[in-house]
Length: 310
Image 1 (cartoon, rainbow, N blue to C red):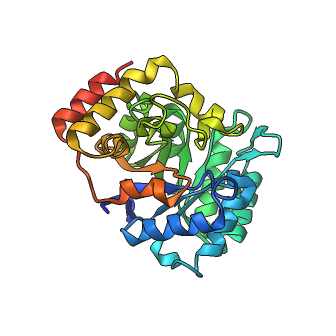
Image 2: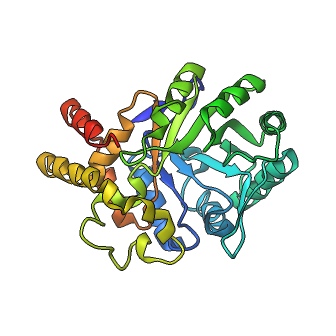
């Protein structure tokens, strides 16, 4: 699998990252083991998680697998802080210094490691000053809890401010990016290029819709059919996005590859993108993406870009 340098850091990571949002809930320990081992076997390295995934269950699973099933040195471990989700599904934002540090300490305990490679503030907190966020991130690096820090789901102006406020480099920015969600191209990707920060796109397969599985119906075993994840997929099931989904399917048929390979390759092709995240629930869903590095022909990429201009 292709590896890319993360911004101006010395860290190189796989161009495809494995997301763990369903681990500890829809993905059990056996599937998680299969997912991680197959991902690493083909050269994957970036593993993305967060305390809210599976109510901490995702980090617990990773902690059980690292050291027993896989070597910690083979994994680029990325977690986040600043967002908590209670059992009722209510989301709470808190990016205060104390909360970020305590959250990471809890994550390190669950993960069974003394440090993570990447720590991100998962979302902007409207009640915490950005300077306080910067101070927390500086302390996290200085104390050895994380090698590098970054931001997730922040606006470009917030990224620029924090990059200037930090005494430690802002290593990366993470935001949603796919053929059905290209807002990052307006300001965020150019900001990353100007600042020398890496960019990691989450939901690179459009929350699953670009795989083509929802073209004609909602499969009974899909996220859109589950009560706790239906709202995650629903925004892209409208008629507005059907033309993009069909364009991906047509390109895939012509290239004789699965639609998800086309969608992933399109997102990876942007020069500012270091990696994109995918979150399969099972190893069977992941395997088509591990078949080998697939490069999208320029003409096809341009046609898809044109088709996805909403």
